[in-house]
Image (cartoon, rainbow, N blue to C red; front, top):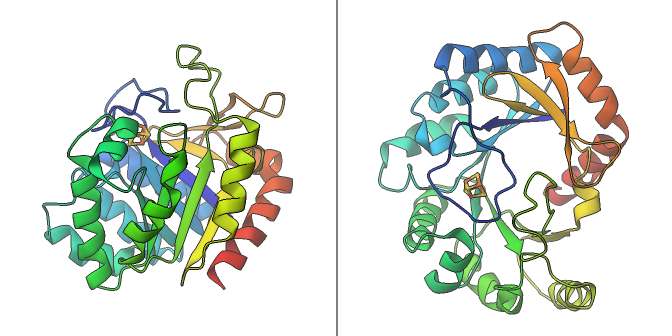
Length: 276
Ligand code: SF4
């Protein structure tokens, strides 16, 4: 069973298309520990720490340690901003993290910056990837496909190949209804999506490459925010979330997993095939 633990107070980047509604109180380390323990007690055995951004919180080391000693597969999704100058993070990541996910949205800093809104992030990501790769930490690269980078797939492939990742995931944009301000600006049209899908399927690489269409991302897993709010993708709409309740209320996590049951099983099969 997989769950995503998202930090949702704020992020060190301001990606203009971000699908998280930031706000509320800053994460409390003790609450985050309890949220992690609730997930483990329920039997969650795959936790993705993500959102904005795990590298902003020194206590994420403690959360990863608890998750790992609780028997979970620990996946850390980060924009690398708070990690890339801190070689110290390498020691606990090597010990407690099974997979590090990093964004790569262009083959150079110009294209990447046009998607991530930050000129320095390409260097942060590639420096951190080099550090992790040279220390045998398994890597996953994530590309958010959009009109700015759709012609860059070959270049991105070459760029990430040097780091020997386990997998490269290319995501079709999922336009959240909570962000009507961005409309379709970041979506690709159907013909372009098909063309890029064909292009990607022709790539030869020593790692898995997956193209994730938006409808397959729906109801794959519950998401829990740093303060314990649980939500899932909506059962009624492809483009919105559905709040389920607090992880500290009896039965809420079970309800969330029931809602995700069908899709999470398919997602788990896909996930296992990627790592086999
Ligand atoms: S790094 Fe991720 S969480 Fe942060 S703003 Fe960008 S998309 Fe949102």
